[in-house]
Image (cartoon, rainbow, N blue to C red; front, side, top):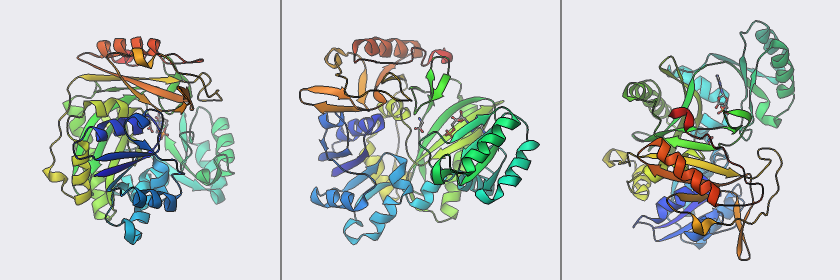
Length: 423
Ligand code: AMP
Ligand code: GLY
């Protein structure tokens, strides 16, 4: 099978690594990819929101399977486009339809969906631009802190936690008048939940599903979870505080009703569901759904997957996931992100990366990297992910930290505390 991965981050490099290792993969293509994916297949330049251009790549390179990494093309309807185009109908595309991707693309839609299936989540109300006065009223009697969420995709920046009525009323005005463009034309005002967060990932064919291991992400830029939100600065899998009892509750209260809901509403969903969860006094609540794998969670989860991922995707496409069995490496995976100095605010690009040839005992997944002549240089905020597998979290942390020191580029920044809260 010729396989095309859409995307260019660490998640896509980890997917590329896994797919390239399958005997079912003849040739791997990645669009647009990065300097790491170029070592595993052929990078093809493209604008991933230009579906006509993607169609041409698929036909030119006789692609049999397309795996969509990021959310934007899914929310924009790439799966529906493939279903409509006669020349693409046979291509196995892994990802939900636009309707399914609304679980991530519209917080208001996701909250209403959870309401219909009694899936535990924070209490909420949504307000549109026309309802500013109602929103201000609502906030005047709401307990604090309160959470304001832009309804649409806002590059991970659309969630604000406000600690006072004054702050929340100021922010809701800003949001409803376009702080996040059309993404905040509707705002979800949500009850603040206090607890520990973790994520669970399912792969579904729209009827059955298989579960991937859970992971914990470290979203803040600073050690001790301080400072600005980022795409994610590290991840650990498995998560020690998620025991069998919690896991069973997640399956019964969250995953089963979600998959049942997709089916009952005839939503075409052949892809990943990412459940962002928070554990409150031992009970899981959904913070968010995403319609794809997480980044950097993927870089911690996929190295633990022993099952052939192409085979799993094939079952997903054909609706035969009930035949699939999944096996995991029981060891811990600890992933540390190396970022450009300044990230998640402005940062410089084009810094030469050295030391990659001296890395031992970890896997390196490129994110913001590009080949420039003989050199690999930085081209993004999150530059690469270092994942180490070990029988203890300590062992994984130690190995990833050693290699975080081995790799060098000007301005390199990473958190030294990833996983330490779990010891
Ligand atoms: P999201 O973009 O939906 O992942 O939200 C970003 C972060 O905001 C989450 O990872 C949580 O840390 C926090 N958050 C979102 N919703 C809530 C909530 N209802 N209560 C507490 N924290 C929340
Ligand atoms: N790491 C969080 C995300 O991928 O959304």
